[in-house]
Amino acid sequence: MSAIVIAEASDRPDKIQVLFALHQGMDTLDFTGPLETLSWARHNTGGNIERDSTTRAFNCVLAAENEQAVTAQGVTIKANMDFEEAHYNLSDFDVMIVPGGGTEPILKANNEPMKLIKAFAELQKKDPSKERTLLSVCTGSLFLAQAGVLQGMSATTHPFYYTQLEILCQEAARKGDLQGTNVMEERYVVNNARFALGENEDENPFILKKRPDGRRKSIARKGSDAWKDGRRRESVIRRASMKLGGLRLITAGGVSAGIDASLYLVSAMVSHDSALEVAKTIQYDWQKGVTVEGIDV
Image 1 (cartoon, rainbow, N blue to C red):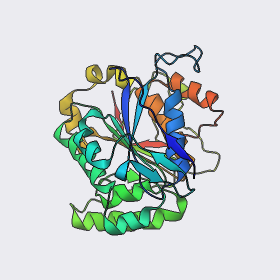
Image 2: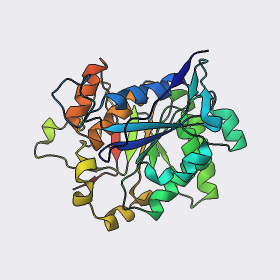
Image 3: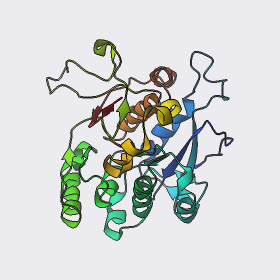
Image 4: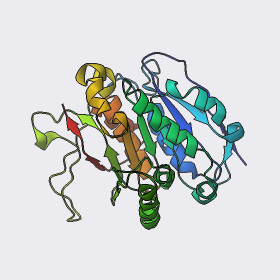
């Protein structure tokens, strides 16, 4: 088996702190796709993206049980911390990413990263002064469903698991406040987004006027420089009034859709130009998803 070890980047204040919640049996690309995408994101665009590490936008930290996880493909990943330490340092992170794959044993035992997901969502409700994002990839959304995080939200997952996601959301609704979940067939679905639409919607890359497959129009919205301007653009009171205290909640579809959702995250927290630059660097054709219940500011 091969091993992946991620060395922490220098802890600069302008870096967006990302926690990957890894687990046994997860799909390798669910993890490495978003990791690769975020690692190329830069606050400054237009330069040599490979050489310019001084404006790296994200600092990624890995958490796993016993500080390591073995993927479904047999890759051993050595983490930076175990789950106990992740809980202790949870308030340090702006983004949590939850890969899918190998979900059944964890769902049955209600094991980690379930508690970590709940704690991160609760942290946002208790402290809405910080802009936080929870992103799941593929069947990682099943963890969010069982944790009750998707109640009153819209979500997606791998196409083979739409029915299971609906069932888990229904069970969570019965145990919780009876709010349902809208399961959507999309590349990714974003809740609680704060965006500037721009003066010309025809030039907005997240508003799709026509769909080639004939499905309904997208209600997606354009990403903005939320990370740099968030405190000025949005009051804490307004964020606190949103579901989950304004936690940006993103669920991605199957495997490679995690790259699409991660590019969206770059566009929302850094800039759209940065996301396009990353897509070009990794030679990836970015497919857009949808944003629901966005607040236009």
